[in-house]
Length: 325
Image (cartoon, rainbow, N blue to C red; front, top):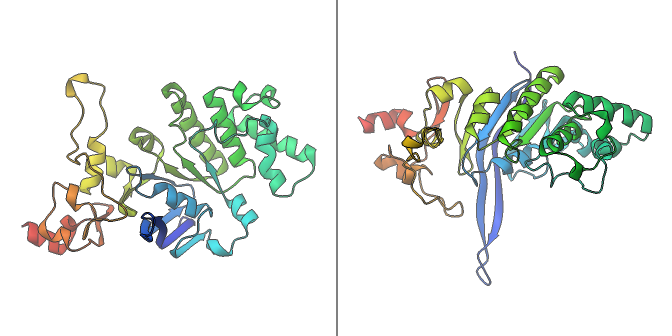
């Protein structure tokens, strides 16, 4: 049985949002009861519209934000009991924009070696050897050791960010839109590099992306988020072949095609996005759902297994099937 690297149960994260002077605070639930299990070597993609809670969930898994409730364990250990330095050795992020996430005043060698110095490694030769080894691993030539970020291309800067994340050999890597700031011609190189590194270093990835082509290429499993909840999970091939949740189908239908005669796809989602401070009653997706039934507005759906997927939708519950019929 595959080793469980991340196990999240009923994880929520609330924020207090100001409603203006003299009006007090209002709760915003960015993550709402998420259950998630990620096994060693897996590539889990989190997808969904902006504001659905993907990045907040990633920050919780990285230990950058505490969860309001629920439990999370990394490699069988509750995340709250893992010391900060140990946590950073276990899990590392790769950020979206490699230029803004790299210190422009530091050399490439210094940037990549910083996590080792943070861990208390002081021997410069040890740091240099590991930095050079990691640069070779990600395809950076040794001559760039003393270069600065502004002297590198976008693809090279992202390789630096990957090297910095991997220099301490973590087991889990969280990639937040790792290719969105890159030219299309470079994106495939970075994706292939991430795939090669996963195999060579036995890494586990969590990929956050809006680009469904990227997700289809690299992910082994996909979790679709909507207003803080995971509404569908399935193996990548199964989800792209036969999506179950109406929201997942709308996301896949929104992908532009190269044929200009087909025009802009109509997802039937409308132009408005639900207010996360005042979410709809019942199923959060029902105001935008073409398959909504009367009871969708009153009762939130539970999760169920359907066609090799986990899906939260009344269409697949006994009550939903009966009322639809």
